Each structure stands twice: as structure tokens, then as C-alpha cells.
Image 1 (cartoon, rainbow, N blue to C red):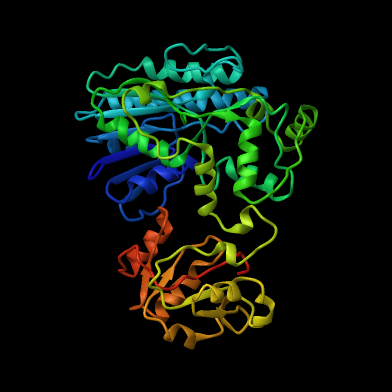
Image 2 (image 1 turned 90 degrees about the vertical axis):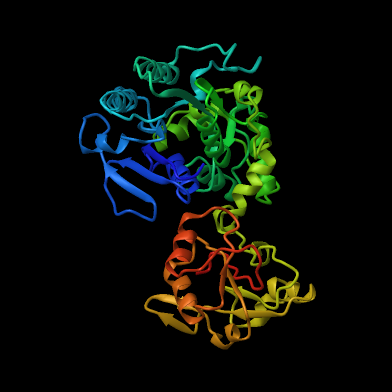
Amino acid sequence: MENKRIVIAAGTSFIGKSLAACFGKHNDIIILTRQARPAIGRISYIQWDGKNPGAWCEALENADLLINLTGKSVNCRYNTTNKRIIVESRINATRALGTAVQTLKNPPAVWINASSATIYRHAEDRPMNEFNGEIANDFSVQVCKQWEQAFNDIMLPRTRKIILRIGITLGWENGGVMQPYLRLVKFGLGGYQGRGRQMYTWIHITDVCRMMAWLYENDHSEGVYNCTAPFPVTNQTFMKTLREAASHPFGLPAPTPLLKIGAALIGTETELLLKSRWVLPSRALQEGFVFAFPAVKAACEDILAHLPRSAYHLYLNTYISCMDTNNDKKFTVVLGASPNPERYSNMAVNRLTAKGHPVVAIGNRAAQIGDIPVITAHPALEQVDTVTLYLNPVIQREYYDYILQLHPKRIIFNPGAENQELADIAREHQIEPVEACTLVLLSTGQF
């Protein structure tokens, strides 16, 4: 999908940020948000309150795709006030968008409105799909039903309308479910929750983005679609798979009584963990959608590859953070190594050297840029022809800018995964991303 005008309501949410990063390279993205901010590349931000008409309505004119993700997080206690806000935030935003679209001369060609796969009943006996799924009657289901009804009530003859029932979305950005899960795994608490037999319906964030693009491009797609991976697993299997991907041999389980106490303490509901969601994306599969991550093992491994080891492990092994590169590299730089090489006798330096890679170890206690620690061996970078930078969230942006200033002609970016911040750095320094590289910078959270 290229050169389209895409409006995302709640585009600063976990899923919204990923959509903007995915589509923002080749399309004009307009994000409706409660706090306006400066544009970044082809992504612009317009303020709205999610319920009243305003200047934001003009942004919908001539849009190719409208995506609505608006709604208060359900990760809270279901008291009277929160229940009201959860429902109203979804219904009011949907109705406001509908009213705005109805006034347009050239309305969006497609409107994808989010819903949730939790609309189906607790199911341990059989899977639910768009054709035979049974709708329950608890609070979270009522939220989805009212949200979908508000969307269906809007008559838009010139706009193709799609309801996307999204499963538990796994990704590396902040705000998703993976950070809490990984904290449990990190501290040895990554066992199953409750009985562990409840079904866990999930989807990789990449497939959420890909399915939305696919639905837009398929002119006959409309109505309800389940946005879930084709192979849901039990809670026990999911936690075991996540532990294995993070190299944790065990994790203590959390029985239901303990979960209830914990949920009350942190202000959430056990339903988010204990409800058995067994949902299949039958329509998408029947109509030809191909998942990039159909199995949870590959999904977990991919997500962890985007995160520093410190996000899921107490032991920060520099070598494990090494990214694979081409065989034609000349030097491997270990960024974050101690100035004392003896401390790394059994770690990255010697292990990489044993593999035949010339290594330059760079420490963090010799120079400063303001408050930013920098490398000790500037001449080391003079030895190389090409530098590959992998953006790591634990390293300050100023550090990368400094490296670029030191060797502006010698930097090649290998983004590996899609990363908007890395793309911004490359664009600012007029550097084209490429796949080949000859030097790796490593970090394990020591900066």
C-alpha cells in the first residue's frame, strides 16, 4: 500500500504506533490524538477529543482509509466509573467519526473499526469463528457488542465498512502485553496463570498491520473479520514458549487465588488472564490471507529480537546480543565492553575472536558528551570502512548522533526490523538503509 491518505484515530496507542510506523514510510498518515504534536516525516498529528466535531473533521476528506482504535484501556478495575468510560470512549468516538464522514464530499473509501476477539464466550470446548461463534453476555462482551452496534448503525453508502475483532496483540513497543509478561519471565514468575488450560488467542503486531492493508486492498472485504493468529495455544503453552525464547528454564505458576489478590493490588481484572479465548480467523484464511507469524514460537522469537536482553533477562551477556552479519565483515566492535579485556575472557570478545572475527572492544568510562558516556577508543573506528548501527532503546539518541558525526561517510544502517526512530535518524543524516554490513555495535543495557 503506497501513496494513500490514512487517518488513524488513537494513533498513539500501542497498535496505532505500529500502524503508523508500518504505513508511514510510503503513505501520508494523519493521527487523531488528544495532544497535538509536530509532524514527523509523512506522519502528522491533529488534536481531537473523541466525541465532538471540530477542525479534525476536515482531515477525513479524501482519505483512502480510516482506522478507529479509540477506547479507554480495559486494563483496569471494572468499577462503575471505569465501566462507563470504557463504553462511552468507544461509542462516542465511533459516532463522532460517523457523523463527520456523513458530511464529507469525498468520504474515506474504507473504514476499519476495531473490536475485540473477547466478544466470544469463554470457550474450552471448541473454537469460535465469524460464522459459528457464540456471543456471551459479560461486561467485556457487552462493550464489544455496543461498540459494533454503534458502528453498524452508521449508514455510509460510499464507504466500505469492516469490523476487526482483534486478539491479544504481541509486539515490542511499549504499551502492549509483552512488557508485563517479560517482567514476570525475567524474575522467574513466568509460569502458567490459573489452571493454564484456558485458550490464548493471540496475533503478532506485524500481522495486524498486514491484515489491515490486505483488507483495504481487497475490494470485496467488508463486515466482521477475526484478527487472530490461526494457531491459538493454551496459556500454559504460551508461557512455556515465551520462557524458552527468553532462555529461562522455569517459571513459577500463578494460581487463581493469587491472581485475584494481585489484580486487586495493581488495579486490573483477572478476566484478562483467565478467560479462555479460542478464536480462529476463518474468513481471512478462506479469502486468502497469509500470516507472517502463524505460530507462537516464531512470534515470540521475533519480538525478543527487537528488544534488549535486559528487557527479559537479569544476566546481561554481551555475546547473546550479537546480530548476525555478512561473512565479508572486517571488524566486530563490542560496544559496552569493559576497558579491562580480562573481564570478557569467556564472553563476547574471545568468543567472537575464536570465530575468526577481528574484534575491537570499546568501553564506557573514558569520555563524556555532556552526561552521555562514550567510547574510549576513537582510533578503533578509524580502522573500519563501514559501521553498522543497530538502534537499541537503552542507548541514548545522542550517542548515535555522536558516532555519525565522527564518521558521517562510513555509516551504513541495517535496520533489521522496521523501526521508525532508526528511519528518522537515517533520514536526518541522509543515509540510505542497506542490508549488508561489516561491523556490529552491541549493547546489553550497560549504557
